Length: 319
Image (cartoon, rainbow, N blue to C red; front, top):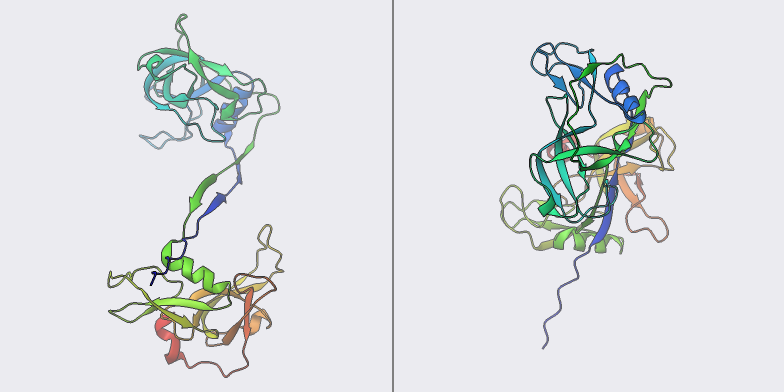
């Protein structure tokens, strides 16, 4: 007899993005607008230190800082690390060094990329200069990178009024993470069961709690969970919230209700949207069942079953 092959563990690329718009104060506005104009600005603190990039409050005294100064576009590498596999969206698409550069006239260092032929061409103490981007918009990427430089050093920081025409007052910060996600053995089985319109958890052999979704191990007892248990399909609303803000790319009209639902036989609640009932009639103890869409791999939402509400004592430990 041939032993059955273990199920294939799921893997899929995943992208987490959170672009958001932020406004700039007078110091950051002057700094980014200056980069657009080919000028690097810093601030002078009460003890005379010049900080680049500039900050709005003194890190020692917490006093507000407004004294802008212009520093050089040449500087010295204070430390570095070689990046032999650039990722998308990084400053250069060929291997480069991440460097901290103390610009001439500054007392602190600026982090950016250094275009160098190899790691053996980079050293602490080497002289570099700014390579400006061909098109500048008022962002840190207006500095395309640094490049090796063997010319004379720049001078001292000089006062600057920070006034530019058409100042940059806000930016969009792009936060993105690309990676390959694997749910593991336990959740792979859970996801595959959902595609069959079943909800399967795993029971801890020690405390006997049934985890849905399963985690592969009991977080309380620290032992593996391998005993699979089908739960539901119906369950009880243990707690809920009313959503009044419409999410981007989510085709659901507000207000709607998102709830924690303890499926029958489960040892903890999962979350799901409640439909088929006015939002202001959803309540703790409401009995609900899943609603599946054609071809859906998980419940679209949960709706009332029509049963009497569950007694509070039946679900109070699952809130």
